[in-house]
Image (cartoon, rainbow, N blue to C red; front, top):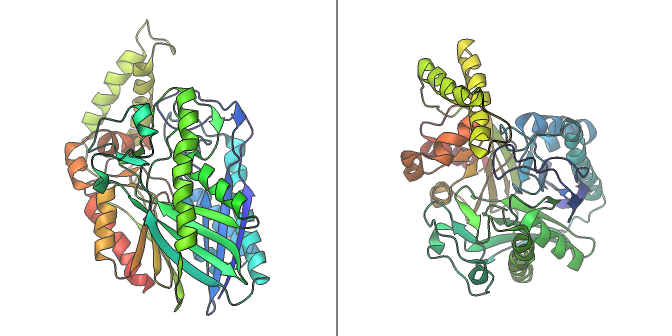
Length: 449
């Protein structure tokens, strides 16, 4: 078995609009606090090749993933490209890359060049693999990782800043968050070549007022560990973060930037423990699998959609309406743009859903099962409970960016994740995403074995 690690900067130029936190906020960046990276791990065993790449980004589109796949196929080979997973951290302090209406305008130049920059990290990882010794040792640890996340759907009240910054702070319902993180290391000849970590929590320590580019707590922590281990490359695989925020979120800029180093320090501490505790494991083989899945959407009456559009347009087109009137009119604009797109698709008889990737990679006992969703914890728990292998990592924001996968309870209640965000991506809400996503991921898990 051979492994190669490499990274390439995907930092945008200062001035691009940052993503997240609300409609048409015009969060144009003013500086770079930490560079953003595409980090790649190339792995080969028994003639099978696979590529894992993680990015300090809100997400990538399926079209971007296909462009990266094509470039890797051209420069490395088709199997390295077919077995490609692109996992994104979902930082809200990076550039917008689509497809959300109004949640940050994607910069055309950045998005055109991004796939090549991601592919460069992959190609360099394969070049380093060629020079890698054949006796690479992989090791795994699952270690405590506490004091970071809070389930925003089931525990509505966020802690005060002073409480959250204490090292002994814990959420009231820790069982609804990740309380451990996974670390997988690769060593050869006594040297740490690289590692990847896995944890589920929104990277939203920084707030709507912050305009500095960085990878939030996960990116800052990974950069720190790389500096402590010169020559190594560290990847971050985002887990089920759809209903989990950091314990510090939506605070003023000064408080957010203070908390960023504190929360990043907690995650870095867990990673250090994981690097030290990792136990070598045997690799009987590696495998990869990718399936295009169309998830069922709810049915909507076209007349009802047109009526909703008219309501939003009536406020937008009122004589006293201005672009500075406040968040309400900005939200009306989001709805108007999204509904026009959906109505146009329905009028043309087009599919308002479409397929998305559900994909996975197995490295011996470790399986990464990924989708483009912001997956809720309960869905992840169901997959892990039923998966065949001993170490199953359910990754979100993988190969695509398609909004939330809420659990049954939150889908029934409706609201932001279940009802609004699908429209934000100009799609109709899902009918039964909990059960359908669980089955799709388990199908990938079975195929990997």
